[in-house]
Amino acid sequence: QSVLTQPPSASGTPGQRVSIPCSGSSSNIGSNYVFWYQHLPGMAPKLLIYRHTQRPSGVPDRFSGSKSDTSASLAISGLRSEDEADYYCASWDDSLSGWVFGGGTKLTVL
Amino acid sequence: EVHLVESGGGLVQPGGSLRLSCAASGFPFSTYVMTWVRQAPGKGLEWVSSITGSGDYTYYADSVKGRFTVSRDNSKNTLYLQMNSLRAEDTAIYYCEVKGDTSDNSYLDSWGHGTLVTVSS
Image (cartoon, rainbow over all chains, first blue to last red; front, side, top):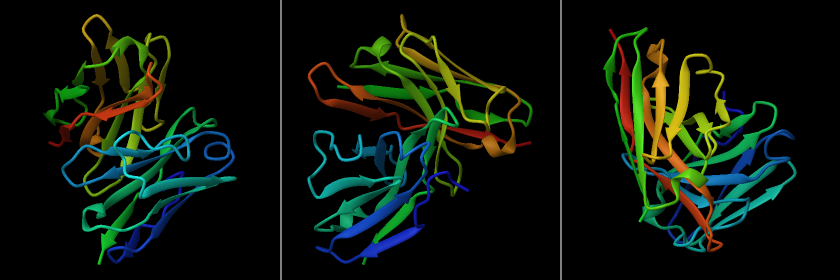
């Protein structure tokens, strides 16, 4: 059971916009930054979003992050087949004094 | 260019030990927090441990506390994870990660490609 809660799966068709939610608590998302990672099988994870909404250089602006209270969300617009991957949210947890990840959401592009 | 290369994984019996290494290059190693993250077969990402740039502060997941020790040698730009009393549930790909602000106001995040640890008799 992950500290951060994500749906196990999501799907969309090419060109569509999809959102992946991440629910936490006051000790993590409520008081610390949220990060989002994309993980393709056999590859190293890749940071998509840091500090709730910021994109590292090289990440397309089709990817965006938002945060409200103890929840966060990753939105992907103009969905492409290459976006098919696992997506994870992460945040520091003050009560655990450690990082916590969501369980991951497998995105399927139909 | 930033590079992180993990090594030291392999097959070990339950109760055994392994030491993982992560060789870093392309960034000022001593100024960044370094982190170990693992992924067990068929499971999601799990944070294992982090260490500050100076090595003065270390943090561990409850699942490994008391068994794993993270350290770094800033003179060798290398991160380590000493894993003792290994259990079957420690079987995973272990990644090292660096992330943080850069001096030119951008953001650094890089991962190695991981090293596989298999705990089995």
